Image 1 (cartoon, rainbow, N blue to C red):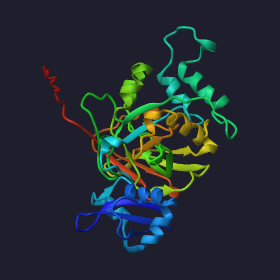
Image 2: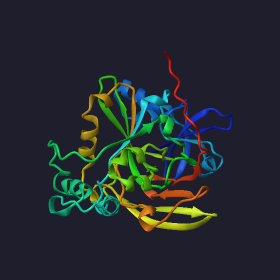
Image 3: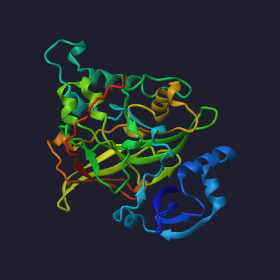
Image 4: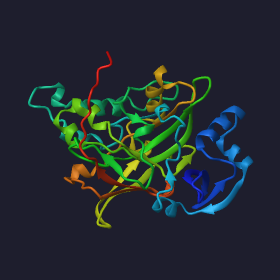
Length: 331
């Protein structure tokens, strides 16, 4: 079962469950967040809560996206309590592009490896520990909060100071923290971990800056485990036609870390275990149009598709106007 959130014909919030490609409204449900809290309170799975409420009329996911009525498949009443984070160098083949961006300036390092390649190799050697054991920690980054999330179908804004506006087709894990501070996984969703690769290429220490951008995930939240093999397609459409496309892989069969290891190294920090918070944690990719020399333009449309996750994730790219931020003293 997959879940979507949207605005109904009256402009009110609604939730629908998608099974076998058919989406039907969940009765008396206005948010996946509230459904998750109810599941926690009743100590059952979210599917049980949905079954108890029952399903109503069918809705058209594609039409909802085209009409701009889709919401992200989970949000938080206070967007500041939704964390967007991620990890990189986690997929087989993901080191090649990063290594090219982070080539050393001639200084001798261990076996002439860049820091990126060394981090990737650490994952290959220790990212899949035996159950019950802790593996090597991955690269990790903070991306933003709920205010930086763009719903499916809407344009992702790139700030005027950005030097690039590139897609990253990924899988995101979706979590809520229960009243005892335990992370509870709802499932997974397609994600576009939109980044500034030109800024990152200047110096890998600019990675943190390059990640502070808007992003999108969904449109559907897939309840349950992540398939071991995920085979999707990442596309850029320009003028309504495919301008670039390339397959992307995910799932543990194509990764150098287990999902459990990546989850452990995120939630080991007490900061990320505050009751009621929502976490959208992106697991990385090995596929970027930037690696093929593509420079996106305003109006280009990103499409990330994988049949196991339902409808594709589509977002145009838009460039914001330059703005001046004035710092005003309060003394």
